[in-house]
Amino acid sequence: MKNDKFSHLDETGNPAMVDVSSKPMTVRIAKAEAIVILGDQIMKAIANNELYTKKGPVFQTAIIAGVMAAKKTAELIPLCHPVGLEDCQLSIKAQTDRITILAEAKVTGKTGVEMEALTAVSVAALTVYDMCKALSHDISIEVIKLTEKSGGKKDFKRKQA
Image (cartoon, rainbow, N blue to C red; front, side, top):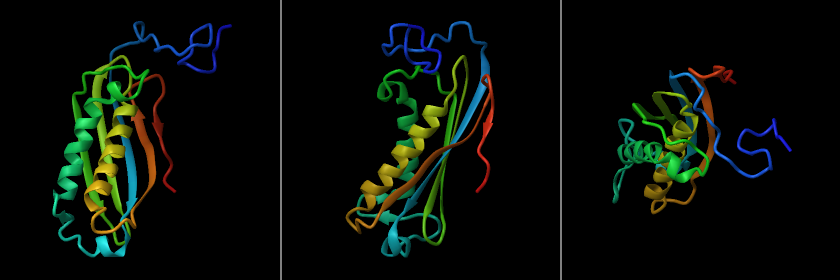
């Protein structure tokens, strides 16, 4: 039973890694975003786009955690290919009622880095939660999404809302 709808299932319906051996090597870039709502008490503590708790600088720590997670994506997502990640950049921007975490991952390879970018923002958001929960549990991770990808079979760019 060949399954053409799900790329991670083999002909018998069992999970399988996608064979990328015949794909061309291209520069592949993926961007992802996470939105974290921190609540008024925590948002008031942000100064100069940084937040400090007893655990240290929250945003700087979250950026490091996101990069580390991106590098370990294939260890966390069962059928994800290990890639030689060439670059992973994260930034965190505070707005009046939320923070936005952005990641861009890049590789020259046969498979994309969407999962690396998504893992980066996810772990960065969880790190923010962990470092701020002593101040307040009024924290929610609202959105995690791929915003853009290029270099593979088809490019993607999410329309702005």
